[in-house]
Image (cartoon, rainbow, N blue to C red; front, side, top):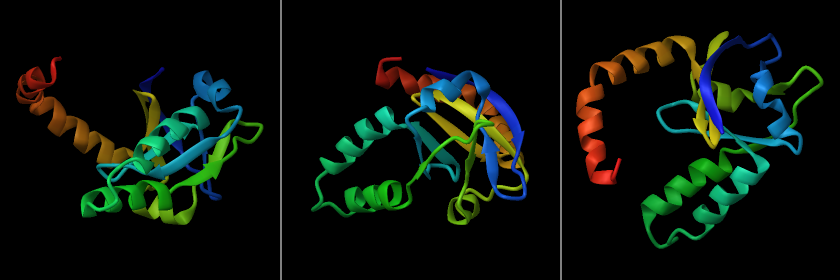
Length: 143
């Protein structure tokens, strides 16, 4: 399970170090894709397969299903960690998420999210300010 918040710097070659405590989960590779809220999602191969199977079973006759599948699948790429536990972020994903040099890697149970540090800080401030309202809305979801 991925949890926590980690701050890193992208180097000049767009390499991003993943948190050392999670690196062993990516020994068979990783998949990076466009995420929601203008961040990137990083999945283990196992978790990516689960998601891709769900996406493949969405009704292709619905425009929203096609659009979401295209974003997640066509925007994805395989990645391998180097000896220092880094992955290379391609320019199209870096640009999508508006990443600068300083980034935050956030653990969210079955995936990692990569955010520009300033965007993450703003998102957190807004979410924390609205936390009571958000929590009340979760009652309908059984939480």
